[in-house]
Image 1 (cartoon, rainbow, N blue to C red):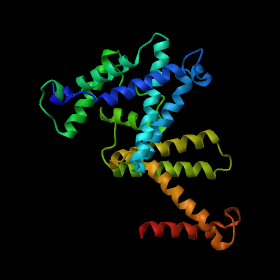
Image 2: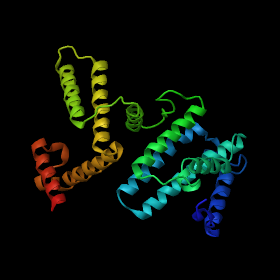
Image 3: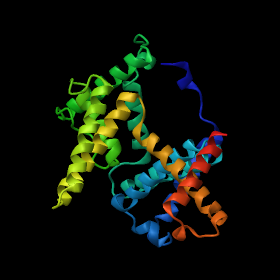
Image 4: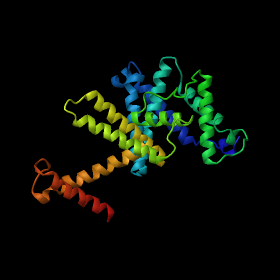
Length: 275
């Protein structure tokens, strides 16, 4: 075993974890706890868990170390909260959660903990997926797409589905082919929106196809699509706020401005970013 695993956890770390566990136990006390916390279940808390994970990603995107610390705390609370719910129901404990992930990390890193040869990053990624596939097989999940969680965001689930399919060769072999596919899907959407008798279901399908192909474009370009969209959202928000702030140049509020006037301010915002 690697010597680093022998390092002891600081007393402060253990103390603060114990404190958090105790706070959650008190919040969930049926007699003296918080009424809102007491009535929560796995299902009602799940949306908050997802939200907190995204807020961690947002803090990282903004490179704000204080916010990263705060948001990781919120996410840790979700783990403790869900584990407390499970413990009350006699399902598992927080110790079981920690044990499970520890065992998984050790088994998936034989080059660190079992003396196997140390692979490069690319080979390790392949080995990681092979080990995960073996774990799924032990659980009787033999289908290529088994165990891709339905609770993931649609974009992340699309990415995982396409990665799984690519592992058995169901994949475009060059990004140019994906770009051609995107052009094809855009043409199909155009045909749907200009028809005299629009079909909402077909339009939805075509938009879905475009988004699906966009995920494949990101995959082929070596870009995480959710991170890219997060960055794009931040960019849009920043530039739109510039328009809102500078609308006074026209002596107007946004709702009274023409698109052309707003576009001028949008271009100013872009120029300011490049300066």
